[in-house]
Structures are given as structure tokens and as C-alpha cells.
Image 1: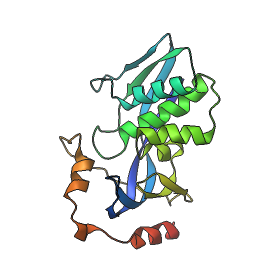
Image 2 (image 1 turned 30 degrees about the vertical axis):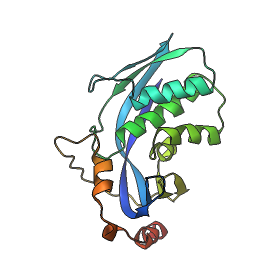
Image 3 (image 1 turned 120 degrees about the vertical axis):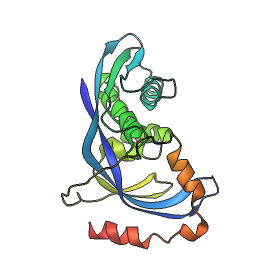
Image 4 (image 1 turned 120 degrees about the horizontal axis):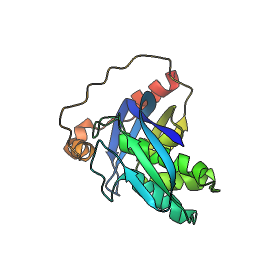
Length: 198
């Protein structure tokens, strides 16, 4: 079985403030794009992952997603997953989250398990803020910590030029949020107008 894990970009992003749980309150318009990783899933006795472009460790989001679904759905079989990376690692394009979302979505079908949408979205949310959006993709307004989603009509077609940095930091997002002064917080009105325009 073959699945595509589509990258995402933020068409707009405002940080509204810091939450009591340590996360930030945001308002952002999310959009999936054509750039995608490719997952190939085959039958296997256990869950294994091959990814030639990167070192596979136990905290890989693909493995986390597979083991999480296997446990929640009480699946006895495994899967061999091969990930062919096209989304640059650590680029802010949601590559790891996209891979996790595609893994969940595809393994539900591959293992023929019955998981309702609410459970699937809960599993996705436990893996990261972008994962629930990337289950379906498209265009959406995300608020709160990024987990509250309001689907929008498809954004008009447009070209996007991506210029990923040469040596991304694995903690880039956390570093950027930590460095943002309170003077950088806004009220979310610009993002709301953007969503309304779409």
C-alpha cells in the first residue's frame, strides 16, 4: 500500500500569548502543498521502519503513530514501513507530522481496523499539533494551541517558492517561540481576516 504525506505551510500565523500549559495561543491558516513524502507499507510480523534519508530512532513519529494505533486498536499484526523523504527535515513544513498522519490514516485501512474519527483525531493530537490537520489536509484555520481546526474552502491555486535553511535545528520551532517577546503578540485579527477572505 502506498500513501503520500503532504507538507504544509502557514499562510498566516499570529501568536496571541503564552498559555498556562507552556504552549502558545496561536491563530494560523494552514495549507497543504504538493510536496510530499512517500510511504510504502507492506505486511510484516512486527512494526519496522526504513528511511534511507535519515537515522531511524525510537522517537520517530512514524513509529510512534504505528505503535499507538496498534495498541489502541488491539492489532496483532505488524507492518514494514518505508519512508521516502522529499520534505526537507526540520524545515518547518511539517514533514514528521505529515508522515505520522499518513501512517495513521493508511494503517487504519491496511489493518482494516474500526476507529472512529474522534479517536483517530485524539491519537493524532497526542503526536503533535500539526498531525490532526494533516490527517485530511486542505486549508484550515487553527486556533488555541493549534489543535482547534475550522476547515476552510480550498485556497485559490498559487505557486509557492520554498527556501529551506541549509542546516536546520531540530528545536527550531521551540527556539523561535521562546525568543518571541510579549511585544510580538497580536490579537489574531489579521489571520481571522485572511481566513474570511479564503
